Amino acid sequence: MNKDKETPEARRERLRQEELKKNPAGSIHGGGLQDLFGDLGWKGIGILILLIIVGSIIYLAFFN
Image (cartoon, rainbow, N blue to C red; front, side, top):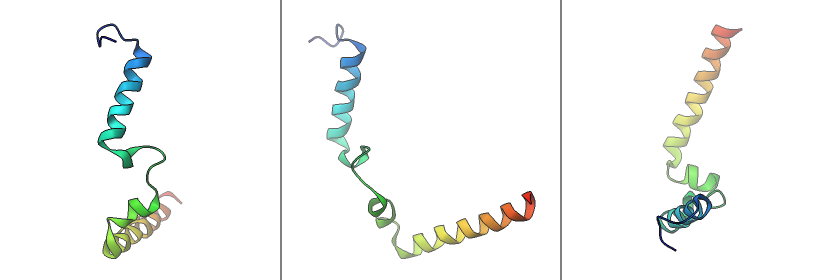
């Protein structure tokens, strides 16, 4: 099928398939918390937890 004549649905599906080939971990089903936190390491996770705690304290101090 010519790219000029394809329907919008076919184009979306073709683009989705191309993206899955380029980045298989970027799909909805590929990846999870292990992938999200696996790249951070223990220092990154510690900083993230600390930021969440500090953000919660600031939120409670100003909006309560």
